[in-house]
Length: 539
Image 1 (tube, rainbow, N blue to C red):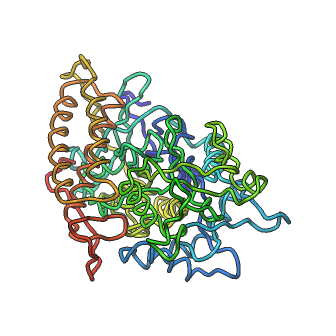
Image 2 (cartoon, helix red, strand yellow):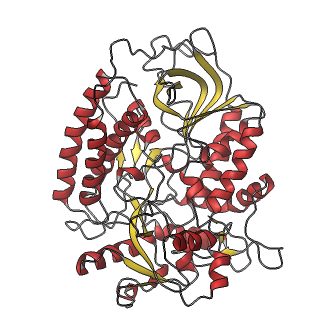
Image 3 (cartoon, rainbow, N blue to C red):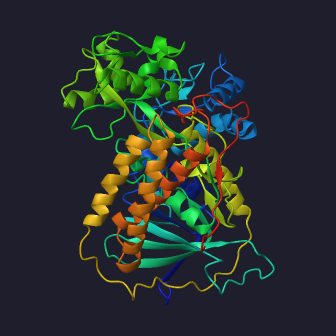
């Protein structure tokens, strides 16, 4: 640490999921890397991923079919070239993980990888580690990270805001350039309450999505849209924020917080039923339970509202016990803990916010509108997911863009560090009460669920935006006058992301993919991305 308490690194990675760890391992042999993790490295949405990673690995499948399945799910808004890039790089991404030591589930002969199928896929192409793929991948890469001498890990730290050249008057790297440059970030140590300044040659936002903006979500508590909010405040465009994927099958139980029932359960024959045992997906889509997630989630939501149900049921009881334990050991064990034997009785399920398909706009190397700033994974909008993400394309996207960004970082010229201002809290005091934070957090998540959920209307969206603006002003006043905390930073970011979601939804006068409006139920002929551009940002 330098005398002015500024830490200096070649690469600052904010977030510790698969996207961040991929970049770190790719650049750390020649770069000094710092990873900022809000909790422990293992606490990320990547760790919670159950299903697996999509990749074409057998002769019955083809890259063209993977591309087509992705384009169909994305409802006209996928970038075709990006989709081709990701699908083409899938096999080598799996091989890279295997070389890192990840142990995927194999066939009985132990020679080939076992492939499962999920909704929206025309073939079996999901590589997995039983039903806890993300945990296996994250555990393996995290161990590699901890063993690397060139990587510093700051756990229990949260980024506050990015530092950019438009904010720093002393920025003189290239006086002829009018581009906004990222110089690092302010980071709060949650244990000490101290805000440190971290300078970096290159900064990567890999903070995941914003599922916690909704009352019901499959995401971990750390998914508060931090990277998207920070990038927006710094001057980056965001795109397609109205497309929030609701996973159709989250376990419905008072003691099962955010527990996901993997798409693979339906891929292996699980059937959706009403309480009386009647199947209902035939009324909504010819693909039945294997329709894309937006179709299945809306069908469940419609049935629940029409019939006044608390949940529907996912039934895989026709499979033998040994099959269920082999394919879904973690889901089986967790359900059994809660008194549900999935081999003997259907699993109660409801939709829940699962994935943020939009995010910070980036190019094929993960570069944002700000020089030396990258956004990777769920934080970014690459063009791969369009209006609806195809199952098991997310971890794949993390690796493909993580490796592309790493290559770009390694080719970038070294620049001189400039003196950055330390965090100034001389004019703020300790908060006298924090009820504003807890109350606002609860109110925001409830009205986002009720007004900006699976089915939307113009009136609901207008009401939501009005409430967001009121809450945003209250929280900003609190932020300006009191010392910051992890909860306050997350709430500020959630309000910003909520505003982006609602403004994007209001601007789309059609129904497409994950965005369904009762006032605009038809799909426009010409698919157009929703791009929001910050106008009055202060860097």
